[in-house]
Length: 529
Image 1 (spheres, rainbow, N blue to C red):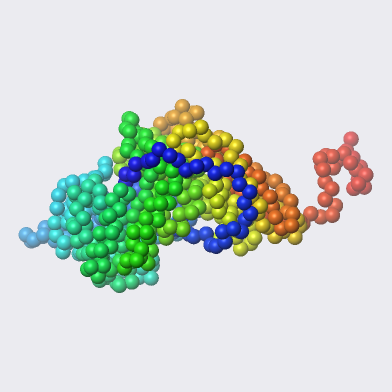
Image 2: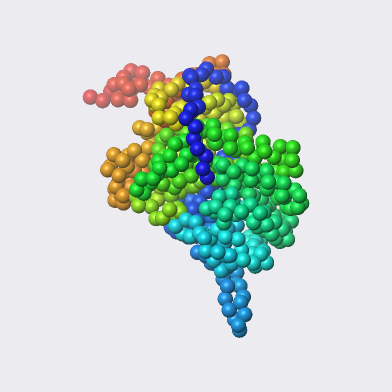
């Protein structure tokens, strides 16, 4: 997950006068096709479930992907001895509880098959605080039986029509020695061959793919494609990850890292199609099954308004390059480096523990309120329209990853088409920035309490909400003209709705004096003394 950052940022976009309608088309759903999660068994916790319920209510991701489905804590692979012989029982007690909960919340699994159960592992090398085993199986036959039992159980319980909509990914980042013993390419190819064939043995319509590689070893995908083609192996999608942070500089309970500009994420999203062009896998869906700025779960950049502005152009344009790009992760219930030591700790999540919304959460919530039709898109804005004629504008301030002077007062000027028989429109604006909707900053101002008290949590939840404003706008010749000034690292959503004027004739001249009963002559009444 390492991709050193360059020294030069994207050039900040100048104030623009953009007429909507320049980039017609549909807004792809790639940005919310999938979201990442901490290890599989964390889904049994109340805090996790409450966080996912909130995320699904306000954002509505389609799939969820995380590590550890086959790790010991989930208890699927259960070897035992009976009458002097070794047997294996496959148990799905926790699997059923987690998947049932996911489906109840309207989200489907994006299954990642890993890590190796200790009773099947060929070695004791592990990754993470919770010790996911990264070694190949000591018996390929027993691994195939585990995969077959797991997939068959899911089909039997949830139905083939349901499970065939769940992508099945083989392992995680095998190109890194931290995740696959010695990053052995040949051993991974064998793992993929055995696994993919076993999945298809259960049912040919199930979707399987890989290799889920991290940035920095892109030749892996080319070699993987050659192997799959040469062996005529089943494959329904290809996957990789994308991060833009440099090497970690450690401090107690955290790290700091340089960042590449956000355009580097889009370049990584586009790389699989570029590498596979003209080959037998060229037309397969591409899933970016993890992405973020930093690959570390303890980098404070994740908690900031900067991060929301950094990610905004990625969400706006990522669907041009990949069929999905999965934010890593939806909440901070996550323990790769251990149990977090404070509420804000630089976790990957859109939400902290106890459902405090970070600025990046609101970026996703704003995207969920966008329309389906793209009217315009630029370096600092996305304009859409829904079927009811409501126009939405997502605008963001530029970020500078080199630490230059922050940009205040960035302006976006747009001319937006709007059909309004009344000649007027209603504008609702929601914003997060360094000063608005920024719970991390409020937490810092509180003195960074490691375990906030109930009243502090309430205050943080209120501070986390976007600042909202509203006003009426004229519609002139079918156009609404917008002059949007953005604060430092601001991300803002403008929702513009045609006004249907239902004002009764006796109310169209209301003003403050009439409301106070001080002008009685127009209504025929008597003013109060």
